[in-house]
Amino acid sequence: MEFVDTHCHLQLDAFATHEDKVLAAASAAGVKKIICVGTDLADSKLAIDLAHTKKDVWAAVGVHPHEAPHFLADPNGSKKLRELATQDRVVAVGETGLDFYKSETSPADQEQSLRAHIKIGLDLDLPLIFHVRDGWADFWRIFDEYKNLRGVVHSFSSGPKQLQQVLSRGLYVGLNGIMTFTRDEAQLEAARQVPLNRLLLETDAPFLAPTSVRGQQCEPKHVVDTAKFLADLRGEKLEDLAAASTTNAIELFDLGSNRG
Image 1: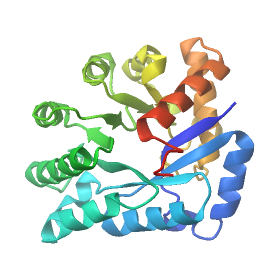
Image 2 (image 1 turned 135 degrees about the horizontal axis):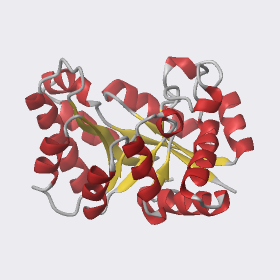
Image 3 (image 1 turned 60 degrees about the horizontal axis):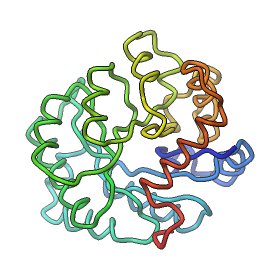
C-alpha cells in the first residue's frame, strides 16, 4: 500500500535537524509522496528548497489567511507569490482561504489575499489548497465568482451540509488527525460521506497528531494512522482507501509529471 501526505509543513523549524529521518520513517510506513505547504512567502520558499533537495517531496506556495496583512503590505507580494508558483516542484497554490476563528486579521484583508491566490492559480493552471474556518458563507460567495477552480478544502472539519457544498463544486476533501479525536458527530458523519474519489489524506504535521500518538510531534508517517481510523469508520478496506486517496492526490496535483 502507498499513501500520500497532501499537506504538511516539513520546512518548519520543528523538523530542521532531522528531515531525512522523518522522510525515511514516512517511506517505511508507505507514505511515498509528500507535499510541503507554505504559509507565507518566506515559508513557501523554504518548502520549495526542501522539495528541490528531497526525493518524492513537492511544494505548495501560499499565504495563510492570518498572514494576509503582511502579504498585502508588500507592494510586490502577488508578483513574488506568482514567481514562486512557477518554480519546479511546485504543484499547488495555497494554503489560502478564510479563517475568522479568533482572528485578528480583517475579513477584507483575508478576502483580498484569497482573490490574489485564486488569480495566480487560474493563470498558472494550478490547483488551490483552501483553508476555511468559520468563514464558509463568505468563502462560497467569493469562490462562485470564478470558473474552473479546482483544488482541495484542507483539514475539513465541518458537517454534511458543508461537505455537500464542497462536493457540488468538484473540490476534494482533505482529512487529517482531527477525525481521530473529534467528538463532533457531524464531523464524523461527513467523514463517512466523503466519496472515495474525492478523498485526500493529510497530516498538517507537525500539528494535529492523531489519537494514536496524541501529545507527540505529528509526522507524515502518521497519515497511515488516520487512514486506518477512516477505513474503520467508513467500513472500507484500508487497501481501497489507500489506493483511492493516492490516485486522487496524483491526479489533482499532477505528481510525477514534468512538474516533478
